[in-house]
Length: 257
Image (tube, rainbow, N blue to C red):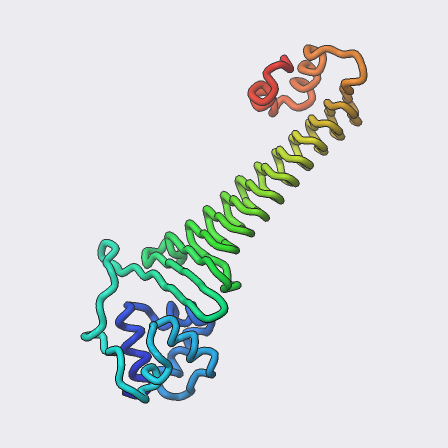
């Protein structure tokens, strides 16, 4: 077989579309189509990546020697996932390794699960995405963006947990968002941390806010631990100035009632 025929057979044996194969190699569907039509040939770097992806030699891939069967009839079928195939892709080279799992089931155009680990700089993208970098609905990684995000650097539209976290609800060493808890917490409505800054209620070692409570407190209504005041006084101010925080403060600071 020639390279174009081999590529078609290998791709079909994995039950991949041209778009899915292109995503594995970092090229467009149109590029894969031109390879399979024999209109263009891939550069050496892509041939090496394809050989690693399909776990065959480059000579076998381009049809220059016998070797592992490349026809769909002779290639072992991947395991089934319901009515669809699942694929786990391992890529190894002398200097790096990569592991990737892509669920064939999709929702909103994204795989339900996408796991990508190793030296590949491209992010994992899925409803649930796990990787060095990850983008999706629920994300876990070194750096991740999602509705719910857990990472060293975490951006979550709803909830973010990480060393650096940004979200509506953010928890981290440095937390920025609507409601925040962290070593340094910056929150629109509520901030609790060693250092806390908020347009609403700030509670911390150093607190700056509309209502501020801390060792050092600065605000329109400031309660410094260096001054004399009662928890009942502070609670009345919180209820009056930030009534939307009543339930939250009760749970976090039961003594302040």
